Length: 264
Image (tube, rainbow, N blue to C red; front, side, top):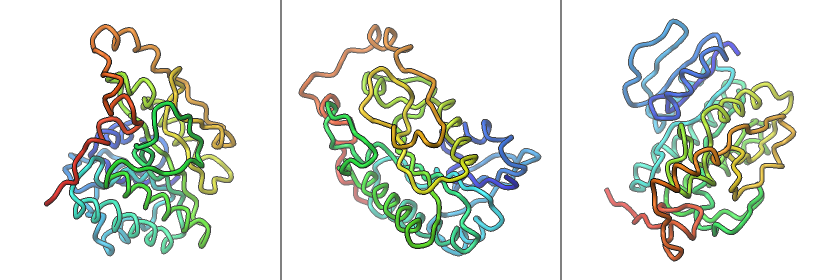
């Protein structure tokens, strides 16, 4: 690619992808409302509020691919989620439509199914059961991606990210962990695929303990390599398991299922 846009590039996952994807395109265009620091020789830094339609239109111009990590990534008030995750997603898809429909990786979330029980094994076509306003916003984003694909042919990989950290941090993450290396491998597979369409892909590593079936995305040629089992002994020795009747042990969304509706 000549130019790859990464939105939300100042966030935790965005900072990792800024480093890991530097060789994927001639230029990385990095966007956020937070400080992005100094630009490397192959970087363009753009401060952009995703809720600003004109700014997003300019942001997408000249890009061959988009990794959309931007927006609110935790439970917040509806007004905050509305701007970044709902208005922002609409702005992004309209900007992509205006600029040749570059392929998009949309960072969705496991929280679209947060009120699914942990004893369920889910495919890509399972019912959405969001666990909060954040999860609802990701349901909206997935619906936008689907509609723009059906109506205009815009290709998007909808990636329902589990827990993308250096290593799993608790018992729940033994099921949801998505290593940074595996995410990079998925990104590479999505952008090299001759045909993408609009698949739903579970953003999860090859964990022994798993809730999600990724067989629907196998045509991309991506196979996760890491396994949270490597961290099982450490987690078992350093943390107590939550009680069986704790919502953290019952629902796939874990603690998000207990969050209140935040007000401004």
